[in-house]
Length: 543
Image (cartoon, rainbow, N blue to C red; front, top):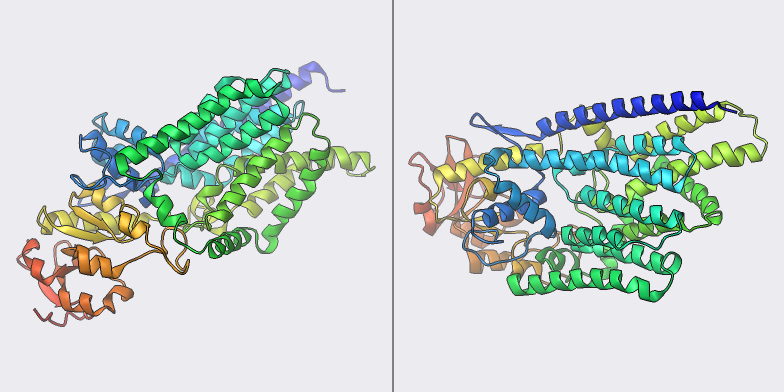
């Protein structure tokens, strides 16, 4: 038997080690935030990944009195999926923070959220596995060492914020459930905030509500207020979007999930999921299933079943929408599920090594605890993609998108220096460049363009968000004055070759396609005009 004094010393030691781990986590996060920043003409800019910078563009325009629009004076098109986050970003812009540092403020908020996830998963583990503090410690530590969650959070993705909301609501729900009380309405108020953050969080709301109806609410009448709350929030958001933007759903929904062959999307999503767990990493899924099934069989209050349903729902949703275009650090769409996945994985490891193995007469003895922590360490390797190791744990690679952000910031400075204010610009990276340099932009990938987003395609080549294009519309109807990119597909077009020249500006070095009848929009007197197919050798452009 362990004496009370020894148990208190052990608890104090665990708290000290947990505090030291949190300090190390925060220091690593601050290093990463600094590493994501870029410098242009002596000014350091803190920036997020491109999709988050699109939200920042909407937020800045809203805060400056132009409305929820991507282009000042442009058509309202909902090119973001995270209304709640965009409104919070607008609040940050209203604090008179210098523009290069607004993203830093948001990154620091996300750091607080990430720390909150570690505390939340620790508390959730104590509720699900009471009297087993080692499981809570292991789950919190492994979550902190899970690089994709930290990377996506500090890059500005909204899914870690959703994870924090889900974990907080689960703690409220299971506290009441363990005490024999019905779910308080506060659980569903918290989850409703998640729907405002991002509408597809309704899947989490619905899963928790259905589980509560089956296992927690005393009768269907007591479940009615929470159902009306969730339904009311969804309806209000849909009506607002229809009224303000002209469509009930975000434009990115039509871009990514509409107008594509559904079977191709599902196959692509499943293929990506298998990539995450290929090779030796399939052991994670095998062990998760092997460890979770016995836990579920002994799950008297069905609290573990709720976690499994939430995980399965997020994985199924990922497959249904066709996966993600950015998967080096797993997918942001799975970040809501992964802390819960980690919790069950660690809980199942403890259950197998220290309960079932002991019952089976294992001779491991006191080595079980060491083996438990050894397996937690193994999961650090199995769960983290190679890119996350080099970027987050080892810091041997610069953050992803930093190089692209540096080029986009350079492009923004060049456009502001060498193009007239009324220039129309066709662009692929729709976040940072418009945020820094105000021009009339055309989103060539359709995130903020209704026509491209609703176009029907016969294939899913390019993946979610990158599978739609309409060059006839771009060059025949919209006719941007300049483009912020060269790609072979555009260069091969006769109308591009015939209508555009490549303008080379030496200070800063910048090469951009400019329409021949819009050459007056280029303000640089030292420009050189080259053919768009031979701009590297600068063969003269035929005017």
